[in-house]
Length: 279
Ligand code: PAF
Image (tube, rainbow, N blue to C red):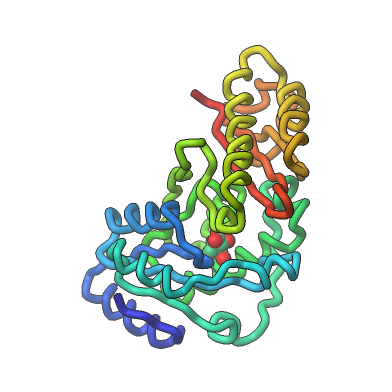
């Protein structure tokens, strides 16, 4: 695996590969890699001749300074995992490489940039869109792979590609879960064994939503799931929304693609997850 730290170097390297007819697959990450990320690499290998993974803890997308400071850093372990997974290139730039000038752009995402993560993490999606925009300009990938665990982020990235007329094709990838149902996440590194068991209740609440959608209204499910979770978590939101517009549903007839979304703190660690409510 080749490692690059400089934008110009990786840009020139990848341009040559594309000129030679190779297709580039890109997996952006913030490191602290787990099986979920490795499944993105697996997927990327199926679509592309050359797989690039970035590890960059993007300061622009953190609205709480302590989250940025506490974000797990495991570059040695990450490099080994990527090598084992068959990743071809690792891009680990410094902040100045990604943002030679601080980006000033303020995106207007419409309804997908309102509610849920957008409300609880002001500025977060602007930071995500800014970094993905920069990476796409530096790497010009043919494909980019995003996990459905961050479903609203996936919608934001699709919006970005559409609005910037980017040629990169976005490939959504299923959320990887432990047997308990808990979604894999870098934040799980900060949970102990008993907390990991409790964290699985998030998936139980999402499954309750799926199992009860024939008999309960969205509002009723939301209120029951919030009460279930409130025993162990401090809940930011439990929401049922259309997965394309992210608009909350009052009634099931409001959407053909309903999805349940949740964000909750377990002992100070913020966990998010979501589940399609179509069987
Ligand atoms: O999902 C993440 O890890 C980050 O938001 C991403 C897409 C790598 C952008 O920094």
